[in-house]
Structures are given as C-alpha cells and as structure tokens.
Amino acid sequence: PPNLSIPIRNSRLPQTGGYDVVMVGENGGWYGAPAGEWYSAFVKSGDRGLIPYYTNAAMEKFSVTGFTGATTYLRDGVTSADDQPWHAMPTMAYTLWGLYSYGYGFQPGINDLDVAPFIHETMFGSNVNYRWRTRDISVKYRDFFSFDVTVGEAENASSVSGAVNIVFVNQTPGKEYTLSVNGASRTATADAGGSVRAVLGGAGEYAAELVNPDSEFKIAANGADVAFEKAVLASSTHMLDYKTDFWTMRLTEGAAGEAYYWRPAGDDGAPYLDVIVGKMYRVSEIKAYVAAGQTQYILVEGCNTARGKNWRAVGDFRGGLAPQTDGDGDYVKLPVDSAYRYYRIHFRGVANSRVRVRRIEIR
Image 1 (tube, rainbow, N blue to C red):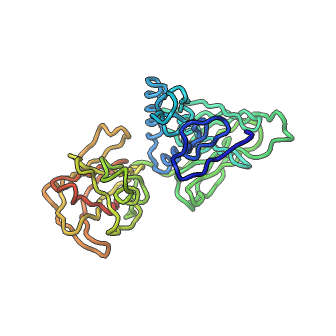
Image 2 (image 1 turned 180 degrees about the vertical axis):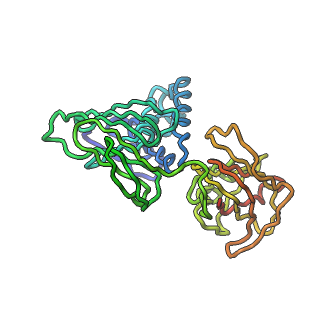
C-alpha cells in the first residue's frame, strides 16, 4: 500500500493500526497462513496422526469460539492493548495452510509444483483440487504411497512453465527405490532429506506409486539414537516465561552440558517428559543424563496416539536407580523393549529442584 511505514523504536509496538502501519511483531501476515508452516515439523516427526489431530482440534475450537480471541491481523491477541474483539480476524487460514501444504502436500516452488503428501489413514480416499498457474490439479489419495493425479491444461500455455512432481517423503537418504507411474517402473534415489521424486509429464492422468517404501512399524533401531533432534514436551518448565535455560528444545541434540538442563516448575506435582519419536522403532533402552549423584525414581510409558489416552508402562524404575558416569556426566539407563511413537518419562521421589535432565537418547 502507499505510504507504508514501519515503526522502529525501543518502546512497545502499537497493537492497532490502519493499512499504512506494519506491525513488526505480527509474524504471520494478514491471514496468518505462514503460521501454518509449523505443520512441517509433523512430517519430520514421522507421526502421521499429528496433522489430523491438530486440524481437528483447531476446528473444534473454531466451532465454539470463532477464534475471536486469537487474531491474525493483531497477532498478540485481544488484550487490553487492543481496541475491541471485532478487530480480530478468523485464524482458520493457518490450519488450512498446514493441512494442504504438509498433509495433502501441495508445495509450489519457483519453478515446479511438488505434491508431497504425508497423510493419515483417515485421509485415504480424499480427493483434493488445487489450482496452480492456471492449471487445475486433482489428486486422489489411495493410501500412504499411492496417488492418482490429474493435471489439467493451462489456460494460457505460453505463460506457464514448470513440472508437477509427486514426492514421497521420509525415506532413507541415498537409498534406491522403485517408482511406478501409469504402470511403468523406474528407479529413483532418495535425496539428502529422504525424499523420492517422480516427475510427471504435461496435462493428463497419472497413477503414481512408491513400490518399496520403508516400513513405518516396529523398525529395528540398530543402535541408532531414534530420539535425535526429535521434539520433547514437558509437563511444566521452571521459569518458563522468563528464561530459556530450562526449556526442552536441546535435550535431543546430542549435547549434555552442565549449564543447560530441563527442570520442572516447582509446583508440578507429577513432572514428566514426552519424547516424540514418530515412527515405531523397536528400541531396547532409554538413556537420560541427570543431576550428578542423584538417585532417580522413574516410570516409563509408551503410546501411539497424539491424544495420549492409552499409555502403557514399559519400564518401572521407581525402586531407584543410582546414576553411572561417562565423559558427558552422570546418567541412568532405562532398559525397555518396546516400539512406540511416544515415550513419557515420569520423575518421582525427588524434589523438583533436583530433577535436572540434560540429554535423552533412545536406542
């Protein structure tokens, strides 16, 4: 718009403004669509249940509240600093963005359109239409790795370039796979990110399938740390709103520095950590680096759904475990023999100030 101004100052940014004011803290655009980019983390996690879980949860809230309490234009929400609740705009856009970009997988690039689905069983049989550069694209999702794609004619062929690609995600980098397109087999190697790409032709109908995908159930871990760089959720966090020192974000990064650890809030009566492994790896032990010299009283549970309604005990160490020591510090090993997408590690019998977890490995 004309006369665009960006207020740069040390004081708190204004919470209202007309078309000619950009709110630096907005973080999401007028309709909040880029906020849906966080759905990309669900694909990396490997848990197909997360996208329908969060989409349905958002829909449930929207049906009740209309989201007037969580704005996209005024991103900080309807507070006393805002004019009135009617300045809010519905935030359903970010949910749709996430669902269509990372569930159904429509990801337009500068040159091509990638269709990179990551769907749940409940999405089998879906038919989704998408318009890209004057072309109508239609995809039927038969199962995890089998899709029917219809590419329409461009309205103005001279102004349209770029290919439509089917991309199969979360495979093994560098491994060779077999693709089938309209019954014709071809081979392709997964790239560094684990994606296998099938380039389709021009307008027409295509049946695309990844013939030999990696298994997603009870996969042998083979000694690998399947929790590496995976998300960890906490029942609570000490000084959550004031310091990042005790957050969980670094627990699976492979470092165990004394200066950084997770610690629950002082009033948390039942502290725990949830580790999102994603795929159902067959694992034998959980290794947790803990406070030096502190005996640990731990219960480990496993679950396969994002809603966490069916936790099952896989290791009970509430009788007490004395820590061992290696070059990275004190740790406890928790023998388990299980294959779950989520692991919940309960900490009992120790004052919360002494619950200090610096690293978690699951092998």
